[in-house]
Image 1 (cartoon, helix red, strand yellow):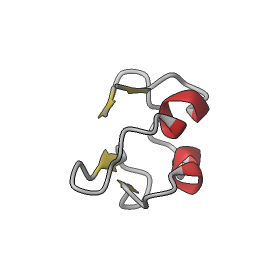
Image 2: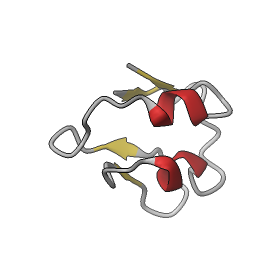
Image 3: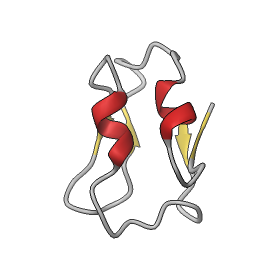
Image 4: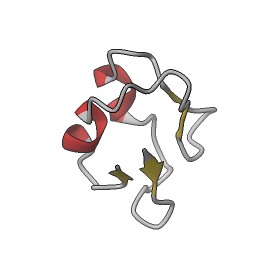
Length: 57
């Protein structure tokens, strides 16, 4: 999974964090969220949930 910095506003906590069943999305403050590939199971819950379309497979 990838997070597009041009689509992610980076001015709030990433709402997709709470929908990841594998705790694979991490964010420090309001910075660009990062996907931990070692935890991600490619379920695409975050891709479907991201209101900005910033997370892609």
